[in-house]
Image (cartoon, rainbow over all chains, first blue to last red; front, side):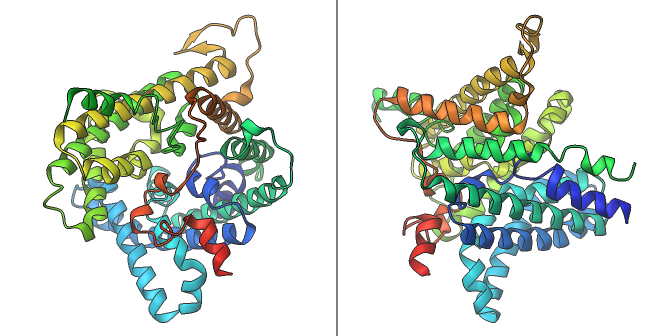
Length: 196
Length: 231
C-alpha cells in the first residue's frame, strides 16, 4: 500500500513525466493551446500507457528474459506499441465511435510519443512488479494530464498578453513551461517524506 | 548531384536548418540531457550514429519498401540501430550509459531521425543521405553542447566538468533543474531566430512531428486547427 501511494505521488507530482523527466515534450508544447484539446490528448495518453504496460510487461518478463533476448527490448517495445495503437484505433472506430471521435485524432500522435515508450522501459529499470508497473503507468499518465491542463490554462491566459515581438510564439511558450516547472519543484521530497 | 549541392546538403543541418534551434525536433533529449556539456556531446554522438546508420539503410532500401508500410519499416530499422548503439555504449562506455539513462533507448522515438528518414533518406541516394545525416548530427550535437555548456556554466560553475566560476560566483542551481532547461532553450531559440536573418521563426509544426506522415490532420493544419474546425 505504502509503495503504491509512493509510486502514484511520484508519478503525478514529484517526478512528473513532462516537467521533471522531460518525456513527452512534443505534445506538451504542441497540443496545449486549449484546455479541452489538452485533456483529450492526455486521456488518450493515459489509455495507451496503461495498455502498453499491460502488454509489454508480460512480453518482456515472460518471453524475452527467459529466452535471453532482453537486448531486443527497444525494438520489441516500439513495435508492440505501434501495433497496439493501430489496433486500438481500429477497434475504437468500429465498436465505440463516440470515444473514437474524442480520442481518435490523438492516437496516431502517440505511437512515437517518448512518454509511452519511456514508461514501459522505466517499469523495468525500476524493477516494478506487474501491479506496480500498471500503477506507475497510470500515475505517469495522470501526471501528464495534470501538466497538460495546467499548462493549457497558462497558455490561454497568455493569449491576451502583450508579449515582446521576439518572444512571440515558441519562446514565450517555453518560458511559461519553465515557470510551470518551477511550481512543481515545490513537491520535491514529498514522496520520500510522506512515510517518515 | 553537383559538388556544391552535396556540400550544402551537409552544411544546411549545422546552421540554416539546425534540427534543434530551427526545426525544433528532438526537444525531449535536448532539454533532458543538457545539464552538462559532456552529456550533450555523448547524446549528440549517439544520435548521430543512429541517424547515419538509419539514413544509409533507408536510402538503400527506398525502392524496396512499399509506401504503405514505410513508417513501421523505418521504425524497425531505427530501433535496430538504437539497439546496436545501446550495446556498444554498454560495452565500451558504461558510465555514459548511466548518464544518458532512459534517453539512450529513447533515441528510437527522437523526431530528428524519423523526420530525416521520411523527408530525406527515403527520397535520395546514399551519398547525399550520408551527408544529410552527418550535417544534421553535427547540428544536433552542436546545439546540445552549446545548451549544455550554458546550463553547466551557470548552474554548476564548470565546463565539461572543469570548475571555472564556481570558486567566486555562487552557481544558479535552477539552471540545471528542468525549469532552467526550458528557459535556456527559449533564449537560444530567440537568438537563433534573430541571427538566422531570414525573418522566419522556429515553430513547432507538423514537420517536426514523427506521426505527420500518417496523421490525417497534418494536411489540414495540425492538431489544434483541426480541432477548432470540428467543434
